[in-house]
Length: 464
Image (tube, rainbow, N blue to C red; front, top):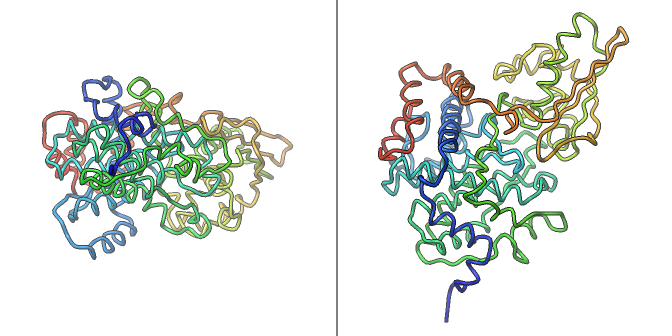
């Protein structure tokens, strides 16, 4: 009696193709430009973890996780320690909590927020090097991105957060690689984690904190699945494309692209299509903020009578519904996902940063009044999901109408933030919470990733 899928079944399934690629991958296979960009994506993520430590939500997460017991695994940007799995959860919360972390545009997935915590926990626990950590992180980004692409932009439309869904699969490969699983073991880990891949968007209704938990939970799920695979547990071979696989269950009846999971592995590096955010808000709104800043100088002192925004219906549901939470945000998390608030506040202040999410900004009567002038319509020319487009028309009291379209959002791989700009963003995020010595130490450690330094030393360098 056999307890596992046959070798031929496993290797012909998409999870098997991913497993074979990940099992044979070495750091020397990764192009230099991909390695350099990966280090900068990690730098962005670590800086955000430090910045998040000043907010209330990490303390709540830490309190909850400490009830499961302690541990000696370092936490990014904090002094406390936890077990490896609990540390992965908290590190995911820290990286993603401000919604300022990177996004793979076609996948609509925050890739680093799950892949990095999984890599950090597994690499430290297994006594691996920073080179092993960096390779596993890159593999996690590649897999998460492809799983998200396979959804063809549909996950959000049915209420799933692709970061939680795709991130779990990527994290299972991260952990499996660092645990030393072979191709079949890596395929099995993906099969197991498929039963853990979920994350609901219902937080949009009331501003709940659940989205902040999604990537860390995905990372923990990946660690768990890989450990079960290592111990001999079995998982379905066709977890992606099967009759009750990921796409058939999560996106039933919709157009999907399961084959994207295995396409171009080792040839096309999806990591290079990962966008670093210029604004601490939902990526779907970035083009609108840039469009406002483009039009703002021409307005002068003229009164604005109406602001018309055109957006694709799928991201529109995220940033325009429910209306009562979008036209008058109840808290900073509502505001991050509010197209009317971001447009109005950017128009008034000429910027949108973390200060625009503080309590005094959220109750600014001028911003709230201007938000009431925002009207939203479907954008028939949107590039979504390939890019997050934004089109704005501003009607003025003097009879003029100003128009601007950002077809491809800034940060997209066609308009990427440079590595220098990523370093600048990192330092801006570190400034309120860390001194120069800490900021330099962390930056040097991250940008040296890929050598024989123990991953444990790297993790210690990234503590508070």
